[in-house]
Length: 568
Image (cartoon, rainbow, N blue to C red; front, side):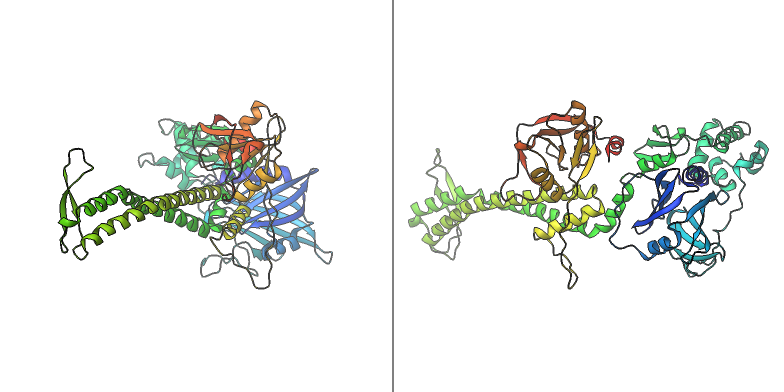
């Protein structure tokens, strides 16, 4: 895990330097396992994000926007009661554990001085946020409840005493000499990185592997030197927050990780780095949880229509025999005098063949000669009609597949709010029924669009689902503004709020169109752009579907960093 004890120490320093002494103004809980604390410190407002998410647990300052639920949770209301208006007196780390403690002071509802502690435990799926009454060391509440039946060492429930996570018998790497390091390592046993993690506190496998890599041929001389050299920089708080992309994966740390030999991007602060690293990741996970049933339904509908198309194609292939049925009927009619009831086939001369060759015609022995001929003429008429009907059904099913492919792409970049709009759209189109509580009225949701700003200050709007796309293209955009969309690839509608945008702005808008498309992970993605006046929605078309002309095409490779920079 990148968020190890050393990373926690660095983050504690960053938080203390920024919000220590600040006043807590607002508290929100946008999601089940995350809280936002808005603090006023040094003349500025700062948003502190604390997440106990099992996969994305972290603590950081953030610039990301989060949508709050209409009703706050019980835990959020309790935090507001005990912490809003209070001051953060101190922020410190418990030893080198992944535990950060906030010492908070204020006056309670009757005006008495009150001391609270907020414990933030960043421990993977065991992460937690715990509010404690300092004077009684009593837990007031936590974002996750842990009864004794689950954890016999400590109970995390209101009214119980707060107990630190069990300590590990490890040495503090910030207080070691080279001799101390050597005493704990057995070079004959190998797996030096695992030995480092086992004996020294606060180290992750990521950090340990980097130490071994920096030591070259790890031995009793090079390894302690590399270890002490890196640790000295950490002691002095000399950090270089970096995201390394290697082998299709991203990792982050307080220092560059050279052993991965990947592409490295540096940041000025840990929080800025975490905003970039988790950009979209945590939200996609929440969307996956909230929209799991929706995704399953859309995939099933798409697959059903794909199977339907294959069956219709088989029917169409049979219908292509229409001309053969007509031929059999005409030849039988011309040779009725040769046909006897009870025959199962007959060979006759094919008058339509240049060589006048013989042809075998299958017969139904239960029918009369004229009945067999009439049967073939009936098959001919049905096959002719079927060709037209089946082709129409294939086209209709293909449009359905395209529609559901678009919805699947929209789910990939959707926010929780977008999920609800997709659900409403499916209900309006008659695919699903919305569950409505008795006595409640369906609220008409206001459609909001994501806004980005180009390098020269031009606004760019993005629709992330069909409702937003229709609203953007047909209601918001002016006729001479520039509209963009990936060429023949499911994706978002993008509009530049300018009649004559610069080439740079067009490229940046094209980057947004490619990023919010099915080709997000591809390179050289074709993006069409034209004036809004040349974009039309056909009568009766599905939501989000348009046709356009007078377009030009450019090729871009989606860049997530650029998207994050442009976001308002």
